[in-house]
Image (cartoon, rainbow, N blue to C red; front, side, top):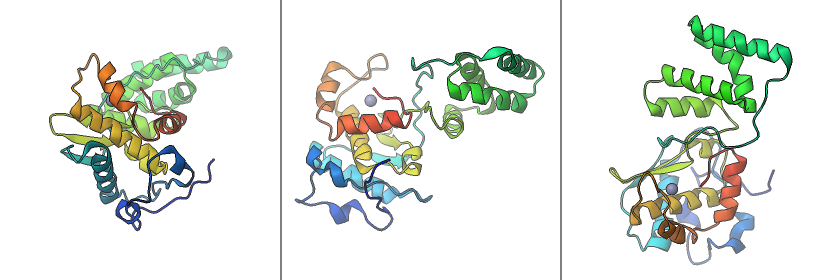
Length: 235
Ligand SMILES: [Zn+2]
């Protein structure tokens, strides 16, 4: 995929690499370290990255904290990507069997039948799988987590989220599992920090003023390309 070095954040914190020599500009992109893919999520590394972005771009004015957590934000699963059409009578029959299984309360069976179609982008299968997962998980958090564990190629929860009431930035743990490059993490932190300084509404989360600030995010285009390659919804 790429040749960027993978650095274990348990051992090498941002503190060890920050300083006047490190630049967040595009010229530093060739040797950008990645997040560790080991199972232990380093909260300290996350906080270190947050502190660096906060100091460098926001004069340390951003308050609150940052955690590894599946963001609660809801993103439509229909991203307008090429839809899959059931291929022939066999697949149509399987789909009918799945619907019957739902009616008969055989939820696990229905899930097993529908998932391959949903993974391919068949809209009706996606919808039904979502309904099943929603029913199985009472709260959105559990639902989003189940969905993201379920669908590797299409993320329903955004990669990051900012909660104004608690001033918490949530970063999707999937980024850690996938060994996201550091520039992705830093871009996301920058974006979420912007949400703290620029008010937004649910109907317009990214106002023109917000986007003006957000344009200055380090590694923005590279980070967005990585996120979309990984199946995360982007702006
Ligand atoms: Zn945003």
